[in-house]
Amino acid sequence: MNPRLKFGLVTGVIVGVLGWLAIDGIEANATYYVTVKELHAMENPNAERRLRVGGDVKENSIVRKADSVAFTITQEDTELQVVYVGRDPLPDTFRNGAQALCTGRLRDDQVFEARQIQAKCASKYEATPGEGSAPVYSAEPVESKASR
Image (cartoon, rainbow, N blue to C red; front, side, top):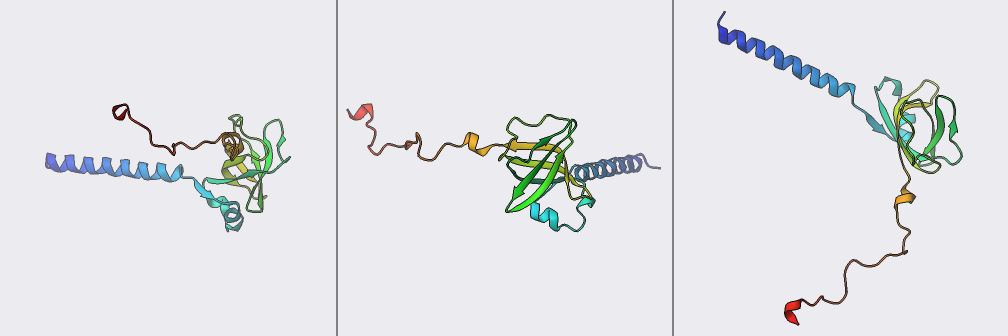
């Protein structure tokens, strides 16, 4: 067999295997973002590998247990029961009223089992409207030293 043909075949096989591994890895790590309503409307949400759903943590719904944390998120008047069973500690901003982004899967009992939680408390980082605000521009033109 011609050495160039051998080299071409081996190169083609290697490139093909690397391409297949890349595509398989992307599909395995793909996370699909859905709203709470979309999650409830899905015919078979358990078939998806990983789902991400977000909403506001309902007031007084956080129940901490030894190995999990259960809570409810709301989005557009729709609620979803969530149980966090991940290994990482919950973020400091995870509390009542915070926005939470949960990554995991929907169990057969319609409870979302989250392996990862991201949370932010928007009110903590936003300024109160009207307080301490000043325009960033001046109504009067600034005189340069050259015009004095």
